[in-house]
Image (tube, rainbow, N blue to C red; front, side, top):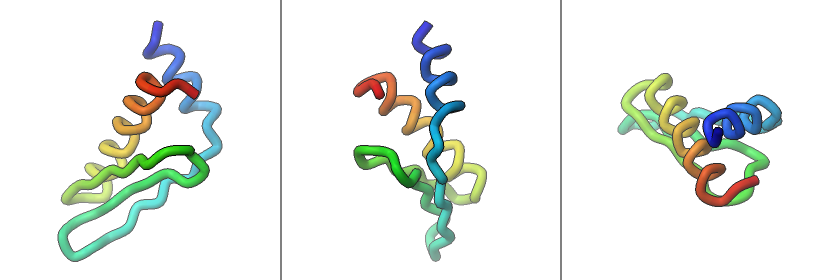
Length: 64
């Protein structure tokens, strides 16, 4: 049930996810989402997947 709520919330979420390339890899973070949510990875796709996972955890833990 929580997964369905998280998926529905993410689908409605009008947040832009920024992915930046750095010397050591990639960093991703959503805009317009309260709290500190950051993802990182060696590739663009890894960073994006990491920040999406962090968003799901954030929603499951803190709601909203």
